[in-house]
Image (tube, rainbow, N blue to C red; front, side, top):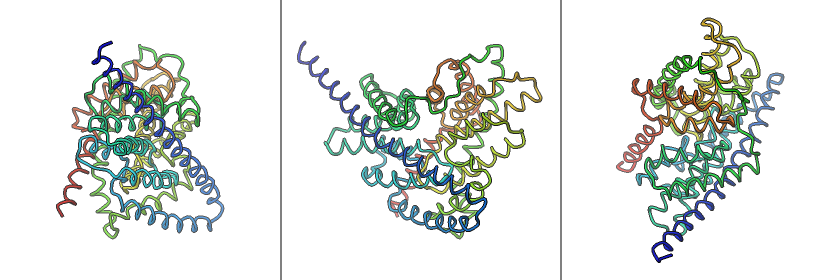
Amino acid sequence: MNKLESYCLSKQIKMLVLGIVVGAISGVIVSAFRFGIGIIYNQVGELYHQMKENTLIVVLWLIFSLILGWVLSIITKTDRDIKGSGIPQVELQMHGKLSMNWWSVLWKKFTVGTLAIGSGLLLGREGPSIQLGSVVGLGLSQTFKLDEKTKKALIACGASAGVAAAFNAPLAGLMFSIEELYKKMNHQIVLMILTASLTAHQVSAKVFGHQPTLNLLNEHTFPPKEYYWLVALGFFLAFGGYLYSKVTLSLPIIFKSCFPFLNKHYYGLVPLVLIIPLGIYFPFLLGGGGPLILFLLNNHFSLSMLIIFLLLRFIYSMLSFGSGLPGGIFLPILSLGALHGLVFATIATQYFGFPEGFLSYIVMFSMAGYFASISKAPFTAILLVTEMVGGVTQLVPIAICVLVSYFIATLLGVSPIYEVLAERLYFDQKKVHHS
């Protein structure tokens, strides 16, 4: 082995070791994040159950929610980089358009995100998990004064590790970095990110187990003779994704119009108060939406009730995300996709002769198609849902549904949601800097 080969080998080993370190640390932090959210969410669920029979608890919870909203808003105000999902901030950091204080983001995002998501708001843990992992990579690169190329690689490693630990989906973690962060990368970076993602997944699995996050048990393939339904489903999801994108990107205007008396830094008070009636009457609709998907599949609801659930989840998702509190839209989008699928399958079965017995299949396809139409990251959508449900038997129909929804959404003018949010954040930061 000559000196050049030896140097290349040692460099590759160094990169893989760094990937393992970032993946391990990110896996521990994201697992603690998931665990904390679960503990608080379960306790809040018990409280809502008691509120039906005790008005005093409702009053006390309202007071507590106002205090909590004020505290969380104050902390969020101290560091703008912890607002929202965190994915736009990671994208800007990757492209040198933002400089996050990694320690500030780490502890504030962890703390405020745990409390906000655990309280039952319709926010996901995935975006914050991605940002938590990315600042681990950022902190490591700054601590050891690594070069710019390595710093970007470690940020991507942490982001992928966040996806892997949050969803038990290491391959989706890798694909997320390819589609959302890097766009182009060499094989060494790919291996490094995959190493981090797999490491984080193993750490998370030690806490939560290796089982899929959504075990739908679809062992048989969707019949190819029914594939034409996937085209119709893709159209339906694309229009749903178009509406979601339009409303999400209009949230600053909507909040300013609906709550002119409230300073934007305290918008977090809005969902924490308004979500109380939802928690009392429909507690299963609270949270990111993972348990909701299984709940809806295990219980039969009429078409009218499914439409009501869809509208409620949509409205409260917008209230939660529009508040600016730390929390993502990954899982809320997937749960809305599942509800779109349930509505579609119910209509198709009752009025157009769609065969019964494929409800969970349509839910699975809809999750991927809806996510792809909004994120414009089709391969991440395919791998994410495939890993979430724990099997590859539905890979082809998922891909067909994703392709149709992605293409129609593109024709409708839907832009990648995270890229648009990142651009807005960048210009907002420039305005603050100039002022």
